[in-house]
Amino acid sequence: MITPAFELSQDPDFLTIAINIPYAKVSEFDVYFEGKDFKFYAKPYFLRLTLPGRIVEDGREKASYNVDKGIFTVRLPKETPGQYFDGLDMLTALLAQKKSRSAKPLVEEITDTGTSAELAEEEEEEFDWEIEQTPCHETAESTLHLQCCYGFGNLKSGVFQRLQDELSDVIDVKDPDLTPADGRRQKRLETEATKFDPDHYLADFFEDVVIQQVLKYKPWWVDAYAEKMASEGRSHQEHVSQTTFVSLSQEEREQLRKFTNKSYLLDKRTRHQVYFSLIDILLAYCYEICITEGDKNVESSWNIRKLSATLCWLESFTNIPEVLVSFGRRVLCYPLYRHFRLVTRAFSDTVMILQLGKSAVLKCLLDIHKIFRENDPAYILNDLYVTDYCIWIQKTKSKKLAALAESLQKANLTKAHLGFELEELESAALLVQEEESELKAVSAVSKQQLPSSELETSDSEESSSTSSSETESSDSDEQESSTSEDGKINSLQGTLQEERTAPLTDCNGLGRDTDTLTLDVSNEKSKASLQSTSVPGKLIEELGKKMQTAIRLSEQPEELATASYTVLQGKGANYAVEPQRLLEDPSGKEHFLEVSPKKNLLLFVGSTNEDED
Image (cartoon, rainbow, N blue to C red; front, side, top):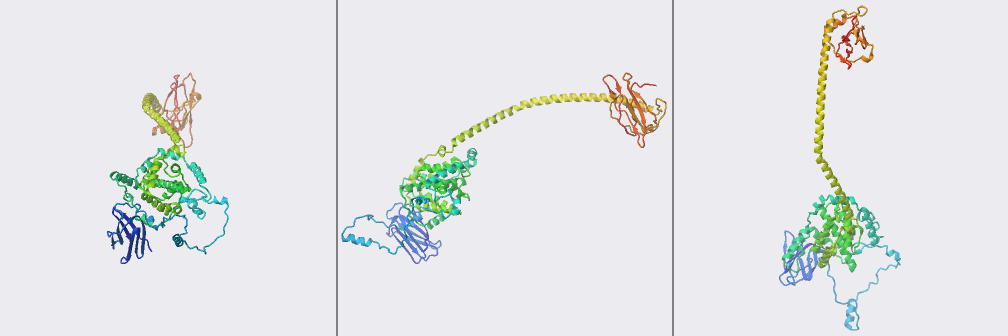
């Protein structure tokens, strides 16, 4: 038989059941309902429901079938008009079998009356004598403590002995089957203290642009909660349907039908632990939805199980403050965004979800179940926790969740509770920031004073430019004087050129043919090296060929400086020299220039007061 997809809805007087039975043979179907029982059969579909309220057959019931959509709809009247049926969206709970109830006490005294004996005989069960027997083995007391329990309601143990390969990818505790709850908590606290990074926390504390952005995101439960508050303000009805504010998708309803209904025998202490672990899981889920802005990614599975100590360390909490402190510490140690405001945001979101009722809680658990189901190693957590929570929450009373939300709302969580000295870190960082701002202020003031110093610098530049201009003027004066001296030399050169046509004789009266004329000054102190300028022209070349004598020129008589002209003639080389500049000593002596030899030029050196023979 196939369990069809179905959906329940209600109004004050009727309960409506819509059953999706495509390709069914509707000509042959059976419908049975009485009290809280409802049964439907149309080959190959079969549906049996245990309703949360009583229905009655009084002639007002109606049924219809939509051939195009394949939906069979039956409308049943309520036994008590106006009664509110709670939990119509808890499909797994509706599929549960009816429990046998009896007012008979579990222990009673059997009388000798025949009636009691007959009843006892009727209710006595036949004993199976062929039951399998196993030998009894005494278990040492030490081995009892080795089997550590975990999972939903601490009902599971020995699971990770068979799943050693997936162990490190799912949880942080190394040997969960050999580590008791106290040992797991101690190791968890030590690991969190090691993982906490002050630099990462302070970076998110001061540079919180992205965090402020994600805090603006509003998930679906924010609007649902606002709608519920507005509805409660307008209406004072005793019962308000939760399905008005929270609805399950078709995929979520399909997943509910796949769950196998279970019953959980939990004592009072274990029930409290289950509620506290539920808060822990919802806190991690709310954080993930906030930072991803509802767009889940491949890291969503890691974030949820890492932030929840229940899922990551198989933790069992005993009160709400322990849950909040554990979640706050893990938010500041593991994820990408580590800010205390993200902790408080997840805290307020969890309160909203619990106040919306078990429909909202179930929707969140189904989303977590889907995230873990699509992640290869995380599916183990579905088997340990999430699937059982999805089944158990459907049978939980809404009053319990409302009381839990009220207790959570009254809880207080501060940075000092987390144990990381966050306030001291922030104070020290703020002091450093103030010092840096003061240094920036000082540098800004110095930059403001910079223009006045630039004025002084410009004044000094102007004075230097003035001095440079004066230097240039003096250089120009010197240049003019040198130009005048050059004029004198040129005049002297002209005079000498006039005399070049006359034959030159040395002191012995001998004539010599020479192409080169050099000056040897006996007094090396009076030597002056002057640049020469060549005098081109055929006249100079002709004169150079005819000059065959050396002229001896001397300085002032008081210095007794003598100079000799030596006419040198070499093969294939003729030199001509020309006086360029006349130097003046401070003592008033004048020296003729020493000119550099150049090809085909004449070199003349003379004194203003030339000694005549």
